[in-house]
Image (cartoon, rainbow, N blue to C red):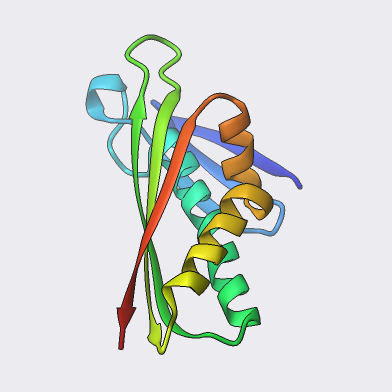
Length: 139
């Protein structure tokens, strides 16, 4: 896996992945930015949500569960001191489907957290307290 991050100006950067996708990162005005893009730590949080959501959806689809939507709502706390690392992250999954059993969603969430989500496992090993819960919506 490869990526490049190029400085634009101020504290704005453009990151480009090896797969050819790009994202703008910027800071708030009080840190020299123009608020034109996602913050780097927000990107890390979104990456965790994407990694875990990818797992949950794939696990449920492979189990032939009829899911129609999956939303991961993430909340995080950061240390007050520099470096302002994540100390706690909570992922709340809202999974919608037809005849979807809570036990299947719980299994998918747990498998992602404990076995498959590289981002979650890496952050947990670094000392971040990561918790998960879910709700199922029948459609």
